[in-house]
Length: 198
Image (cartoon, rainbow, N blue to C red):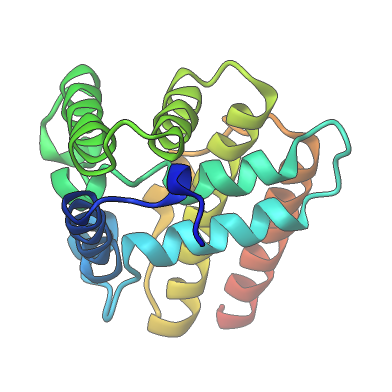
């Protein structure tokens, strides 16, 4: 017999499924920056989050809680299922963006997930990422930007595009030593590929 503390009522399951369906938007919503640059078949929000999770698993740093980094990578853009992928080009202030995302997360965690232990963990991970104070949050902020320029490089290669603005917007912002080494190698590869074309 199931432990009653772990079972959910019918109405709670209905809301849980609503949350699961809402998360589907992360799979179907394309990342705005690529749309604005006319990238063909651009990645979705969940594509981006998934590779960030792989990057978190790949880091060789015993000082980091890798499990937390993976979880943070999975939830950091969760609010975009409701608010969409808001970029700096959209004319919305950082404060307003954060307000909208926080409100969206509150709806997901409180209304749909019933302020459960799991939903509290999701919100806490998102808040930790937003505050960017812990070493894990700083690392995930780094890989958020690194995954973006990695994808930009891949689109440059596959679609013969110049996506320099993405590299310019991230110059000098990386702080984690290993991520910095990844960035340096990516820059070398990008420079070499441009020389080949020339």
